[in-house]
Image 1 (cartoon, chains in turn red, cyan):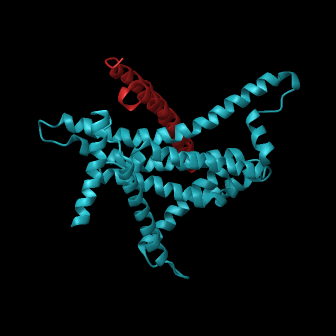
Image 2: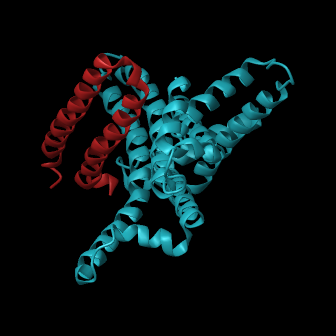
Length: 68
Length: 263
């Protein structure tokens, strides 16, 4: 379990990065199309970012034995 | 001078304790006195800054830069609260702003000191308990006890779908409890993760005598700001979920009018 943790963490980070990138992509597109909606888009984007990030953090807590 | 040496002793004791018990993995874990020292430091900074800012209040204009800074911060959080909760979000500004201050100052302390209160799971869990408990209280105050708890049961379904209502109720209760976990773990993971990444990168540059971890400081500063913001934002979202039945009509219209000039 201990030896496999780095690989699993890498995989988790891979998926998390894709998710974060998709959120940033969507938010940037929306902001470029409608600059007047930037404040609302930013808030929605931050909430979505927080939720995606949480998945990776949970993975870290389960995957890294020292943190449990 | 003696105070200073006591101070460094406290920090060192906080670090040594973690190393003694959990080995290398828990190097940042604090014992209770160390945590209390940092909590006291955070309280000192917040109350000191707020006292200085308050002394700059004037009937016509603000005399001190710190007062103006606090005003801008307040207006920013207020715009966020009104945009998220609606026009009655101004009511919750006191707790939102104090939580933002506590989380932000604790996060920034992590940039200068070996650790910080928010890098400790117990402190974050206490903050999350405060936030979620306040949300429950506000929900009960806005909808009544029965209304608040039937809010968990989802939409009104016919009586033969009672098992589904029960299932929704249980799942919603679990997700309500998980709000504590997600709020605290997110903050803890981000701040502590930053520390660990800096440590690991410092080891990386040990032979070249280059502190690679120090180059992470801009990202850590960004994390500090964003995490404090997200904590408040999610708190505001949870508040808006339990109180949005208040002024059902005209709510949307008003919030558009209010939120636009805030930014």
